[in-house]
Image (tube, rainbow, N blue to C red):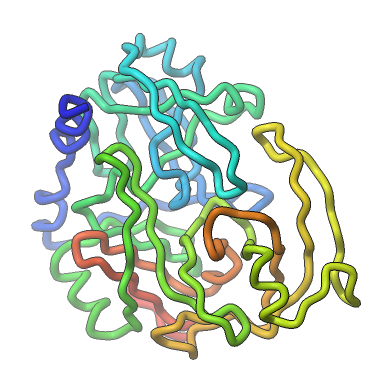
Length: 294
């Protein structure tokens, strides 16, 4: 396991990026769910389109793509989706994996057969940005790899809030912040892989929401991993950043379900804003819809 952790940190070139005078910006496209799609290169030669998912924890590639670059088996990682499903993810070392200016040599990635079934190349996570602050500018549709100077400007001109990390043995990394769900405090995962918010069903009673109440739609379906899930779709008065309640979505579409977190805040909360994830500084920086930094 020490070897795997060492490989993860050996590839990062974030210090040179932070030292540059100007930040690097990479345009992104979106899919039908609004998820961020970026170009990537696997094995130094194969072009791919990957979803930038802050809730993924670990970079995941389609098995067919790992096979093309002759990935070498590197064990297994067991994790859990927000719905509680256990996933046993085979790990591989691929020769190279790059997104924008961030290049990983001998990169540790997970393999998930579902990606081939969905005709997706892969998913890039925040695990690659432990030392490199990155901004999702949803107004201009660019991902910005910040420098020391550009990050300082953002810190001076936009709203910041403390961030908490769920770091599992240096292999996976997820980020959380404090939010207000209606008038209730919650610690929520920041997840650009989810279109909208999902809240634990234990908050329904606190918020005065009945499962068979007016304006609540019950949906039973199978998740992408095959498990049955019951969710209750409705609208909340607001979802707001606890440290800065003026940063909010009101009203806020939300689903209630039996999840392992208090809540997950999805893409719709960040619409019209720029979100900076500064893992070294343990902070998120958020612009208002009228305030964009370039």
